[in-house]
Length: 186
Image 1 (tube, rainbow, N blue to C red):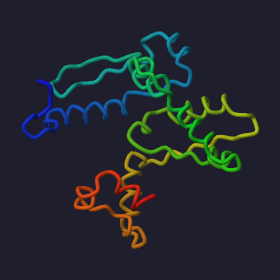
Image 2: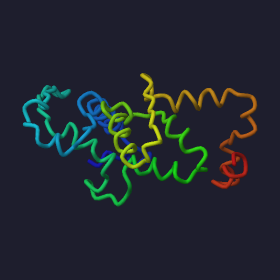
Image 3: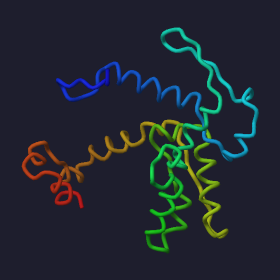
């Protein structure tokens, strides 16, 4: 079964539960290696972890703990032709006014589910620092509840009366399509 409910055009509850379970295990057992080449030289035993699946089966994971998340920095590992997280951040900041760049590098805030991976901030700091002049400092903030920061920020923003003029109703979107975003928000 593909996990897609054709009648409703969405994922089945079973697939949603599997995805949530995977995300939870990824955050709990996965980590970002500071130096993946050195990590590969470590014998398997110290990094292995065992855990029990909902069906009672016990599995052991080792190098998968860091090899899976490594895709964030090296998407070519899964055949994607795109930049890693560090390069996307570097390119984004490089497109900003030169007078703002130092401040932007000092104010990086991690948010979202993948930001919960242990070691992400340290690896991101290491990769960015290697690409930047020594005069630029990199400061990365990791708040404890960062997996829900985007939702919280949006909920606060939507409560502001000054933001009401930018709200897009379903009727607006149906009538104007995606163009309505540019008209009301930009």
